[in-house]
Length: 441
Image (cartoon, rainbow, N blue to C red; front, side, top):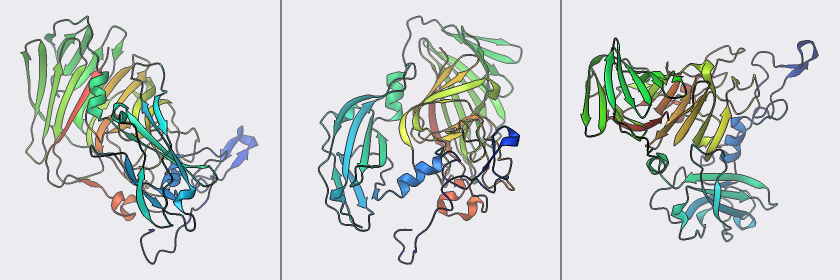
């Protein structure tokens, strides 16, 4: 928009959701169906995800770095989008941090170093490189935060980037326990049963899917997966075997190179169970990845390392911070119940997640970048006259996805809203590979 020579600008429809507090309905905010909640904050200025998205996209100090590559040298490209202010009137500060692990009782990161870059002189509309002047040890930290302040010392936005890969964090976090035991494999009616370190894994012989996990605390009702989201694959056979102390289980599914699915579970004494998978999916799809099922009624919350705290859509990814987050379960619907951030939905750049339940918590570590966590499925707004703001979700309710659906507006479907709002396509059908570690200990 800012680069188009004929663009006259844009505007926000309204700042706040409008509603009437109904004394005859115990103080309920009446928004007349979906006619009133068009703002970026709620009736009491509750900040929805759009607030933070707008804060980043329309920041007069603009950075477009989505991730830092191995060639990063401590310099960031910055654009001055002020009309009359030189960038040297603004200030910056950075900090290098390390995150607590999934087993920690805190979500607070440790600050390893802080600093303030020298002012950068850029006239309105100019681009340049901001030298952060990071210490030589910066690669030892987990993430980099950078905050920009306007000439009046007000925060414009804070950007954050991981400095370690998901595989590096997973390797650090996955602990080997001392009470390791030999892997035992048995069959019982319609189940294949694997037992190691006091944890029993049940697999459905008809589908090859995980059916249940039982540890010393409780049965854990994670089941129905992995399956490719939105795709049916018929089981041909289940292979299994032992390599030294390691036991593996490999369901074999029908399919060709354009619609394939391969799965391998690896059980090693003293370690979480490892899931390797790959899939190819021909054509366009609303979403792509793998899913499982878990009873929504048993979920109480989640803690995760990734972008947050708000959920995302394919065409709404901005405004988030890379951090360790905690969210308790809620059933909030944007613009109808202002209990933000909403619990359900897609969550970007997942490194690990602990699913907190009434049975027993379990943690999943991702060893690949670009994973979206699907946590359940948001309900359709009661006042919606169409499905534009209720994009499709997989049938499974806990997913690890490589592509997610875009969202529309109450007036237009996503397909009419530009390139970022189209469905997903695997153009060359090269299989997508994934590695997850499930810790039920």
